[in-house]
Length: 136
Image (cartoon, rainbow, N blue to C red; front, side, top):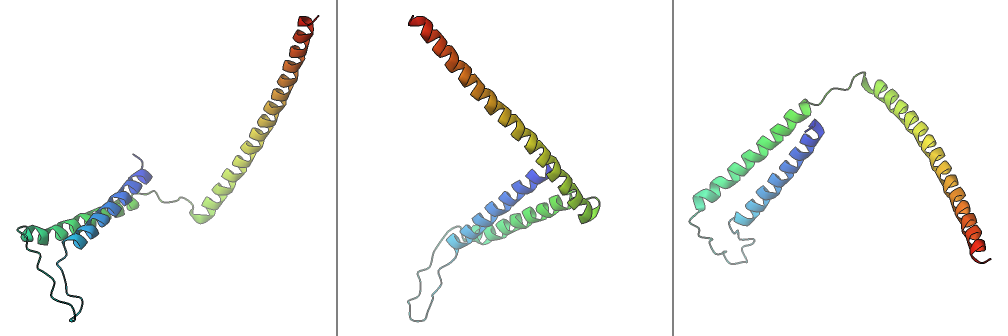
């Protein structure tokens, strides 16, 4: 897998971990009284209280590991050779090449359309020729 695909995969991993971490924190957060005017919220008794306390730490650690892995992948990207000026020159070369190929493709398309029109006229001619022989 190339480096760009690995980076995309790592971004997806980070997004999934963040989504799951925030969702878990929201789901497992203890109830809190919003105002003194409201009654005290009921306690949320659970036998997994110890596990709930450790889960956010584990999920946060996984998120940090994924971010560090992303940094490693970014540092493995090749440096551009020649700087910005060389990159702009290469872009101009590629655009000129693209334009030449596009013009050649357009010529071939026009030639094919001309061939198709000729074929249609030949087909109609044959149709009328055969039709005239049949009706003689």
